[in-house]
Image (cartoon, one colour):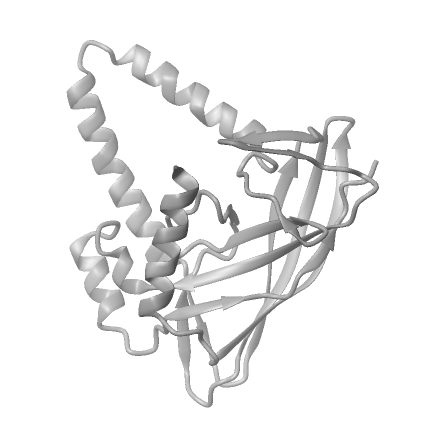
Amino acid sequence: MRTIFLTFFLLVGLCTNAQNTDIEVQIDSITHHDTSTSERIFTVHYHIKNKAKSLISLVLNTKELRSNMYNYSSWIPSYRLFQEKKMIETNTVFDSKKSDAVLKKIMQDLENNRKGLADYLLKQQQELTIKTSKKIIESIVTFQPNETKNFSATLSWDKNRYHKFEDNEYFLDQKTTHYLDLFLYLNKEELTSTLLPEDLKIILNDPTIITGWIYTNKVEINFRD
């Protein structure tokens, strides 16, 4: 059901925003190193080029990547993972240890604040809104005409090859070639519910901030032992 919702959400967004031709986004390479027998860190190296003759800005967190199956944030790039030509429709391949740790902390905090849960949740929501709004404003990247900037973001794989997401099951076969690409969906209007009013005003009134969407090239990612 979540897959259907995200597909619908994406299609609606794409219908209201055109593919952006002012920028070029390309993955240059995907490197990796094993930190242990149970963890591999991938680093996605990519660049963004302003092809326009004028100054442009992006609202974009260039240090983070999220699965296209579970990304509600237009300011964070999505990645798509492929086994040969088939897309792997799951969000469990990367950063599972981090996700488990975050969930464990949330559950513990809820347990510790059980008596005043309503007040605790309200306070947490207010703090999250302030923190997120600040991060979004700080993520604005400005490009001079024809300027290229290089970025990188990491993904952690726990070397688990079997994954299940809703009704889909996948096995990361080490004898098969895998690929990854990125998807940027730039839509500042969708930040309305995320930003503080004063920060939203900054973004909506900035004529250099561009909107639209763009896919990168596909680059091989190594899941072999």
